[in-house]
Amino acid sequence: MRSHLRRIFAFMILITLLAAAAGCGKEAPVEIEDTQEDTAEDVVIVVDEPDPEPEPEPEPEPEPEYTGPYNPLTGLPTEEDMTAKRPYAVMVNNIKVANPQEGVSKADIIFEAEVEGGITRMMAVFQDISGVDVVGSCRSSRHYYLDLAQGLDAIYIHAGGSPQAYSALRSRGIDNIDGVNGSGETFYRDSDRRSSMGYEHSLMLDPSLLPAYIEKHKIRTEHDEGYECNLQFADDDELMLEGAETANKIVAHFSASKPTTFEYNAHDGVYYVNQYGGAYRDGHYDVQISAKNVITVFANVYNISGDDKGRLETILVGNGSGYLAVNGEYAPITWEKASASDRFVFKFNDGTPVVLGRGVSYICIVDKDNSVEFE
Image (cartoon, rainbow, N blue to C red; front, top):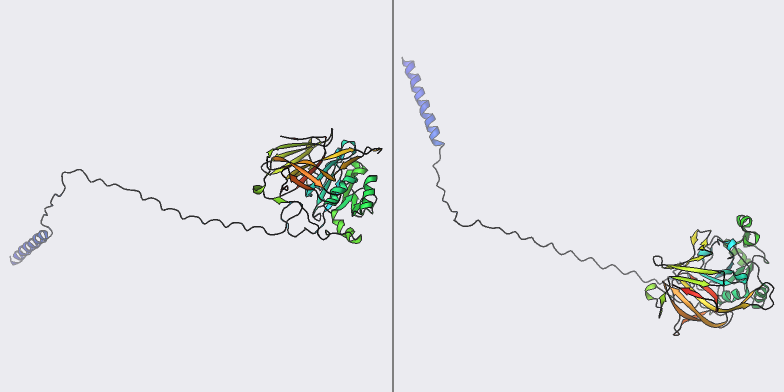
């Protein structure tokens, strides 16, 4: 009986403890004050902040002005000063069967003039010929080419010559290297040309043999004191041709059967040369001949009286008219040459000196009775 009462008492204590624990877990309710006003909802406007200004880029440093040496025949920069060095003037065959020529694309000045039979011949002038592999085929001299070579104080290289040329070579004492009536030490015959073009069109100059020959024969390699090349050059943005007209295409008529055409390429800034119905190419370097400047010299050209070969006289001592074409434009000029050994002096019609573009010059010696066309 007693144990039964104890169990009832324990059960009542357990009930009391559980009720107390449940009462402690409840919190009093909290009244929440309604603060929302009867107005429209707040509108939030988002404004984009502007991107920060980029930092200015620094001005590029101007390229330093070039103060080094220039090639006196082209006005282009060179590694070494060559103003005191004599250039080389090489007679180059231009009959159709002898084309393509070789090495002419490395020349600084190319002269083209008529010889007998309505054909022309080139005289390629190199201020530095040491880096040229070969030049040719070489051909014979005519006496008026000596006026051109002497004006530049050049060492003259040829393969034979007319009686008038040999007479002038002797009387003027011109330093020359002859591949036909000379020792032949700097020349060789190209076997492929000999078989395909003929013996007379196969003589080639090997420029690597020139230094030894020149030393052996004691040929002067520097200009005499006081000599100064009078050619003037400027960058394209400084060139000015007063009264210039368009010259995208030039046709120089050397004879009734031999024109030479120059076509301007604005991208390259040069004239590409064409002849014999196609490109005038350098067969060794596989490039088309091009020139920055195209100069026309109108001269008195006529047949030498009594000459059984129909050879020509071309008067280059004196003065006359001509044209300069550069950068797709041309303007009339004048020329004068005081003596056979003097340099050409080119001027615009207002008397100011001609300034050339930097690069190769192609000089056409054209009979004053023939024409040069411009488009």
